[in-house]
Image (tube, rainbow, N blue to C red):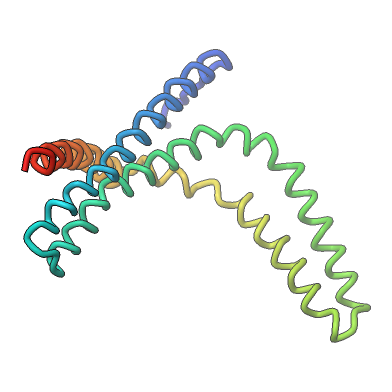
Length: 172
C-alpha cells in the first residue's frame, strides 16, 4: 500500500503561496517570450516576410502557450481542496435543478422546448465542472512535466533571441 501524504492547513497554505508565486513567474516568462516574438518577426520582415517566416514566428509562440497551459493546470490543482469542499452542496443543487427541469418538461409545450434545453445544458455543464476533478492532475504526468520544462527553456531562448533581434533592429 502506498504511503499517504498529509498536509496540515498551515503547510498547505505555505505550499499554495509558493505555487502561486511559481505561477506568477511562469506567466511573466511566457509573456516576455510572447512579446519577444515581435522583434524577431520584425527582423524577418527586413528581408521580405514569406510563408516560412510566418510559420517560424507562429511556432515561436508555442513555448509560451505550453507554459501558460501548465501554469493554469497548477492553479487548478491548488484549487482542488476548495472544489472538494464545495462538491456536496453543488451536487445537491444540480440534482434539484435537474428534477425541476424534468418536472417542467412533463408539462411543457413544444414552444418552450428551447428554454428547457437551455436550462438542461446549464445543469449538465455544471455537473461536468464538478465531475472534472482528474483533469488538472494530468499536468503532473511525466510527459507533460518534461514538455513544460522544455517549453520554459524555450521561453528563455525566445526571450534572449528577441532581445538580440531588438538590439539588431536598434543598431541597424
